[in-house]
Amino acid sequence: MNNEVHYLLSPEQLNRHSVLRKLIDGDLTLAQAASSLNLSKRQVIRLKKGFIKEGPGILVHKNSGRKPAHAFSEEFVATIISLKQSDLYRHANFLHFQELLLRQEQISISYSALHALLTKAKIQSPKKRRRFKPHRRRKRKLQEGLLIQMDATPFAWFGTEESYALHGAIDDATGKVVGLYLTKHECLMGYWEVIRQMGLQYGIPVSLYTDRHAIFLSTAAGRLSIEDQLAGKLINDTQFSRAMKELGVTIIPARSPQAKGRVERLWETLQSRLPVEFQIAGVSSIDQANEFLIQYIPLLNQRFAVEPGHAVSAFRPLAKEVDLDTVLCVKLTRSVDAGGVFSFYNRHFKVIATPSLPILPPKAKVSVLVSPRSGFVVQYKGTLYQALPYSKPVRQATVPPAAKQKTPWKPPDTHYHKYGHTLVNKVSFEDSDQDIIAMLESIFLSRYAEPAVTFSRDI
Image 1 (cartoon, rainbow, N blue to C red):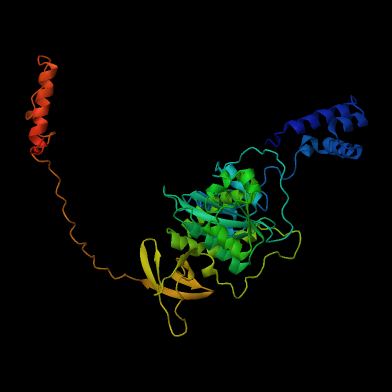
Image 2 (tube, rainbow, N blue to C red):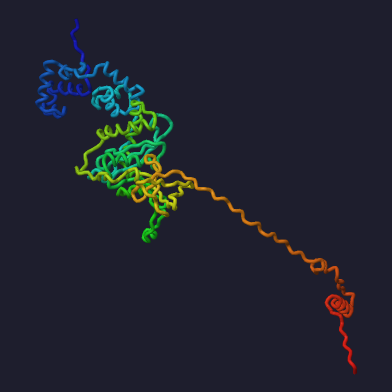
């Protein structure tokens, strides 16, 4: 029976075998062998004794070829791979997949082990990695609520070709998401819902960092010259900026997307995670998505938020007398007549007075508030009135008296410019001057001369 044992040595083990053989044969000193193997003299002596006693087997680890005691079972590995290739988790990146395994499947596994397992199965993460470009990072604000970055992003959140706009806001100091709201397009109402979520949950921030969209900044602001600014010329507020002034919030417009990088980085995270989360939760509409986002924001903050530099928050609590419905709305000024009627976009409305709400005085300036939450109401000196459509009575049109018809004046037939040229003989150069004078005298005497008066007197 052949009891020979064959060992498959690695290049490093082959190098140790060669050095130890030369050390035993006397071709190398102990110091030279230790320096060549980058080991201490004590380790080389131990290897030399083992090599003489056991042969080359001393160079091979005793657990070589054995399955580790803590290795995953083949059934466990097959389960992980099957879940990753399923429709629910196929589009999740490795880190998100690790979190979903713990939350949805109650499977706990480290990220490094999961990465090695999936990479060995030739499964790649759908999230592409770009080469790191070093840049100088702006330091975070020290207090929570000092600066809120706000933006919106269009994306196919439901896995279809149709895109929807997700409005969001993130705190600069902590990276905490303070509001998310989904609409068909980027709009004023979407940003107001984000402000509402933030105001009710955290409070009113000190400032907002936004882009230069017409929702936040009037388009006329870019055409305002330095001379106009020095002269004190102002531009009209947008509805959003007007609302923020009422809440005491400063708007800081950014000049590039990189300036508000934290909210841009948030979009990258949500575009990778939310479609998977929506598919798992069965979310397929805007209303379902907005209900889901309210519950998802705490999970997102638990995973990514950090502690601020100062523990004291800069958020101001929302005052009890402040009604967000009368602030986060379209607000326009109109004048009422003596009957409480005003015109609004070519339609008439009448302010409804009740015993507790007196009739408005004529020519009173009122604010017309329009929003999906408050509806259509009128505000006068802090008091809200209801308004209903009103049709003004149509006045009967008065018929003006018939105008006297003017008859044009016609010259008589004897007028010279009509037929006079036929009554006068034409002058020709054949007549002598005496004949012409005689003709003219005869015409004059026949028309204008009075009968001759004769006088007789005795001589």
